[in-house]
Length: 203
Ligand SMILES: [Mg+2]
Image (cartoon, rainbow, N blue to C red):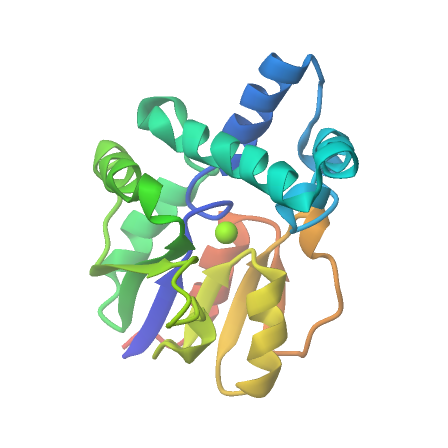
């Protein structure tokens, strides 16, 4: 049995699509995904960099987090990443996979993500939520008992250098294009994920 941890933001949910729509609407900008230049919220877009310069990183970060929360506030307006729902339905049929949805986030949006998962009919075996702001227990997915991570996080990819037995299929975004160890495999979307699992022996 292979244990698979499936991330939500940027992997199942097209978070950036909705996030950029809301930012563009309020700031009069026209950002697209390729404008996202950093994983850090305060350096992510020219507008957050401006906020950082003017009011400091804390303010820029909390403004950006507000847009993440707003994006999740209307789950019916947040689209799945192309092919995500169909691929999850296919993968869950395999008897050799445990397919968990694993997310590290601010706790504010937890009811919204549960609603979103139901709304889209996403299958899963378990939902695991790590609190990004828990000072006593770092939200470190690498420490969890999973074999394969479907995730867009460059931070997780760096941590997996210390776990050569684990694999990450890293969903390609402009803010995660770094060199990682060979257990981190870059994918362009869910077709690549399905192709990867097709090559694994199906028990
Ligand atoms: Mg993510």
